[in-house]
Image (tube, rainbow, N blue to C red):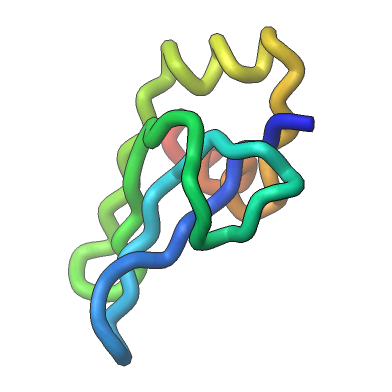
Length: 76
């Protein structure tokens, strides 16, 4: 199954996240199919998700995580 989830990047005590499309059987830090956005929770709370790619992957059957789903709702 394909999932849309957050992938942690950044440094200690200052995380940033990438919104990644990945196979559910892979590790969270493993290889992803596509990076469709990013999320920075601390400094300026930036959220960016490519809407066309998000919708494309939903049509293909990808399941977003709860966090990604709530971030996407905040963008609309």
